[in-house]
Image (cartoon, rainbow, N blue to C red; front, top):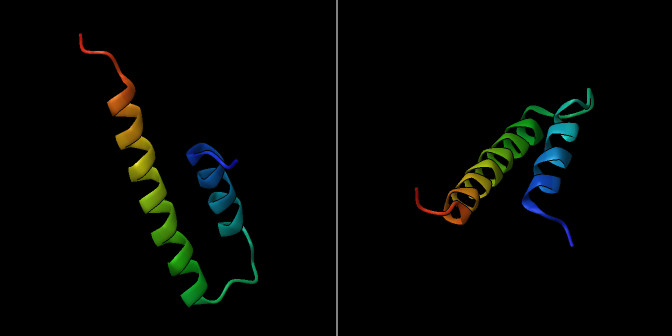
Length: 50
């Protein structure tokens, strides 16, 4: 099972590719932004109240 953290790492690795079209790069950047937001929201929900 792929975790949010794993997904973020894979998307970041894909962005290092030199063989991406402009369209592909923008799509990966959108997916990365969404994955980071989901990770942050989930991490925030897991924190116990202070």
